[in-house]
Length: 170
Image (cartoon, rainbow, N blue to C red; front, side, top):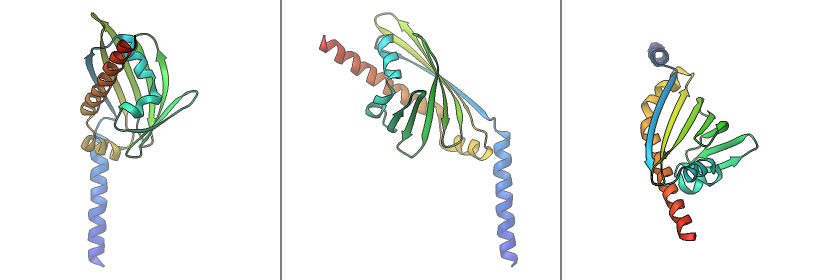
């Protein structure tokens, strides 16, 4: 009987340590990254708003279901993220999102024209993770800077591809 009590005590201590550690981490994480893209602002904006085509150019998106109020992205690893547009202007796209994994937040894309048909795209994310355990897991297994860099790589590549295709078509 004693070995079972020792194992239960160790398990309880581990749970308390993880939850306590998670409580010390901030609930909100923010990240901002930018990229100069060799495509005109309208092409970048159109690409960002063409959510149904994301399965063609984003390697982590398995499917997208568009509804009247927004859309749901289904990732290749089984996560569902619901998006809703909060603001949409020529220079700004602001979204609200909620994940099936328990985090929520806002995503803002700023589209700034630069000379010679180039665009500066700046993306800011603010993510709230209420669960202390999920906060620890997100810090261990998710790098927001790496994720945003990969996303910007994919946006840049597809925006350039579309811009070249449009130039060849005309």
